[in-house]
Amino acid sequence: MALTQQDLHGLVTRLDAARTRLDEMAAMLTDTEWMGPYFPIVNPPRWEYGHIVWFEEHWCLRQKPGRNPGASPLLGPLEASLRLWTDWLYDSSRIPHKARWEAPMLAVDEVTAYGVEVRDRLKQKVDAGSFDAPFPYFLELALNHELMHTEAWWMMWQWRGLVPPYVPSIRSLSQGASLSIPPGPVVLGSTRERAFVFDNEKWAHEVALGAFDIDTRPVTCGEFMEFMMAGGYEQPSLWSEAGRQWLVTRRNHNPLYWRREEEQWKRRRFNKWIDIARDEPVLHVSRFEAEAYAMWRGRRLPSAAEWVRAACEPGFELGQCWEWTGTWFAPYPGFVADSYDDYSVPWFDTHVELRGAGCMVTDPAIARPTYRNFFMPDRRDPFVGFRTAK
Ligand SMILES: [Fe+2]
Image (cartoon, rainbow, N blue to C red):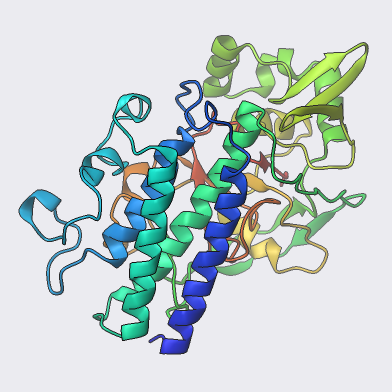
């Protein structure tokens, strides 16, 4: 679907709103927190900010018309960057993770100025109307990319216990029940009318499903506590082979960010320890813990297709957290990688598909029904919970 000039200005407004939210978080960082200690699962904010800006510049300002945008910059398909060495410093496919703490990154004021300059040039390009056909797609790509990194910042805030600009609210869940879904087809993937989707959402296709039963809402903290109290972490029969391996090496006995204080379980929300609300969704559990809980209830995790089929039923509660599914992240039939070919391809078949239409810090643009999130099954730092099925 071709975008009008008005649509493009609307996209620029959304890009500015996304940057405002990123800058609100950045304003909370002290000088040392901009870099912070090394962790394999997060990025230093000073690198990540530069990466977001580099990505926007790379796709929206530096593509030469008619050249292959996925080819190496060494082959010369790109215009020069506004800053030196950005392709070496900020391309996540190129710079090793550890080096993001060690390489000579732009200083904080330099990287934010780089962001302003790239955004100004982008607006000039939109105003002038001087771009070729793929440009509107790349604008949307840059927007989605920035929104996803902003959510990754919320995860990092939680992981590192940083002071947030505000505390996002989590709704309490209803009493809960289950839905009985009759056999029938479900459509997975996006139709071609949508303005922007990632390659892994293409395209709509039908999948046949048998009858199943699924929870109307995610598992709550109170329910998960019952599993813990019943010795769920100590019963090997509840855990998959990979789950048992995970338990042996990690020695976890409760969700991430939980601890016991004088007979009372508490959880850390960013920089504060608070009481656990029993009727909120349990968050920060691995897929192994989710599977073991489901097994303890005599159930299992829903497949991604079952989740999508059930999500359109009245009474199905969603949007409080990402949810583990029983489905590995894999390409849909006829998959072809888009220009940004590192978005999906490197993660197929090793990552698990998550559904849920986003968590409390997911932007609505990302929470579209066809969006497929994906993480390794041992990750607990995303705002992820689960529901069960049978
Ligand atoms: Fe990225």
